[in-house]
Image 1: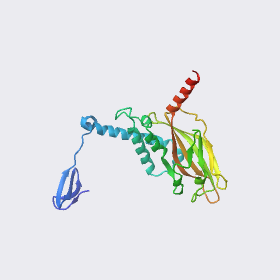
Image 2: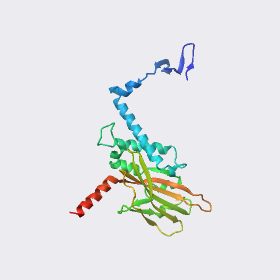
Image 3: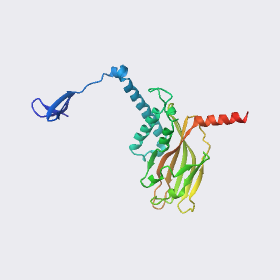
Image 4: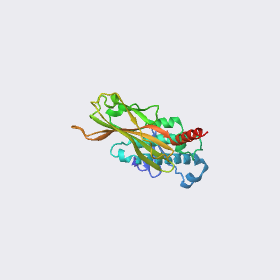
Length: 259
């Protein structure tokens, strides 16, 4: 709000006029207005419209991604999570080199390896002590259906709880058609006293492969104990599956077997 400093002079804003001191001199300027119709149609605002469109697409895609996992994340994630998801998806959208600006699609941008890497490192939720899990708690083996669990890291120093359950799930997403479905692929419960360094986790065959992309979601849950209450302690994306490439590989193998 403007502050009157004399009968006719003020600093701050009153209406469309802003006054301020610049090099000791009181300066006033009028805030320009952009006509809504010009913003929608004028040539000089074409890039602005495209940028706004891309941000709107990324925001809607981020909302879809988050809502599909709300059954797990409600009450856990913080304010930074939605922002990070939108930022990653905006960069993913802009990585689409098949379509011109203003028509780009996230499904095409995900073909870019840097986009896949950014999403596969997305940390959805963690506690301070579980931040060490990073991208090394589970690792995919040469067999795409088998993941290796690092038991030493799971029960590392500072990790509370003697009984932890690991969930790996398929998150099938079609950003362009607003489809997001979660499917549990494997679960394993581990006790701190078990004398083993690693466990292999075999994922079930996904029921649904109708979406262009599937994300592998890792969750760590602390089970109830004498001093602990059950809760999720970690959640992250650990893998990205291009279903179109998978289907093409299957089709190629089928054709080769019949030649």
